Picture 1 (cartoon, one colour):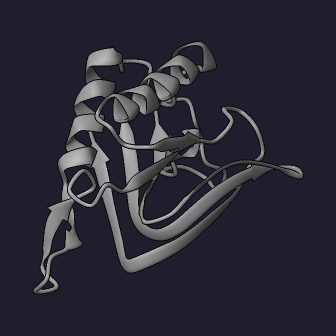
Picture 2 (cartoon, rainbow, N blue to C red):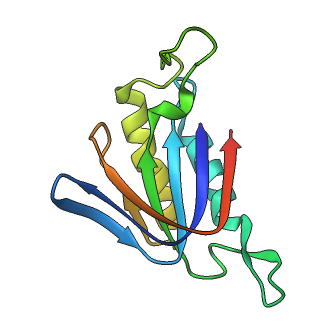
Length: 145
């Protein structure tokens, strides 16, 4: 499982004219699932992100977690995180998890964040989404489990 975590002032996701979710201060998580991933990996990654100290304390040092600030999360399923660009000019996505694995694990990952007390919005798996990300910092961190 791969995640790109971006600290945001606000974020949102829509499909067509429908707004699916909007968040205020927190993180936007671009989430990629591999065929080998399972619920244990999703839970571990959710816990890591929730406790990762990427928000500034009173001294402007990154020392406070998403849980500490009562922040929000927006999870965007993104198979393109598994792009293989080693050959040619067209990326291959054969390392990405198939929809029957990736979709339920993306949903489970978001549920894990909610279970930790983090208000969490989600993008729509397999849809063409418009994602609004108002970065803060900017702080962008790549994680892989």
